[in-house]
Length: 173
Image (tube, rainbow, N blue to C red):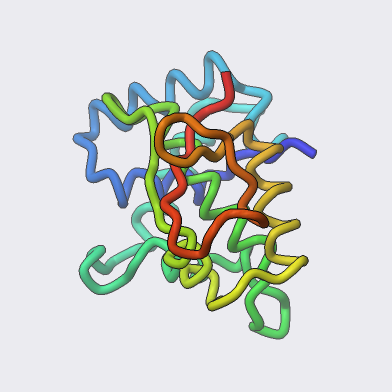
């Protein structure tokens, strides 16, 4: 399954990155021109409507990053919650890695993201790995064409490394 970017994904990415408007426009243009198939189908009909949707979603976030971390920001969006208000765990994981994909693709001088496995698990509310969690993470990484390494470009499997190992996430070549 291939993950598609929604306007909210880009709004969160822009908020986290704190780009000037000119850079945001360049990224939106690049995404529209080069990877239109990576955008949700309902937003592919008009570049102007797509851009406006991104900025409307960006305007919804009226707080600063000091008040809200990346994961909580993602969870605020109904796309990542079930109708009963409970968190859609897989959606949160997908959203987290979508932002990393955008960062690695469009943020200048960003070739990788480092994070301790313990910290990553904590982002999703876990202290230990579960089979479902590893499955969701592996599916998101594979679909977004992201790969994990240990230091020294040693490929790794999140299910098998030590909890205090630092993983490096890169775009798959």
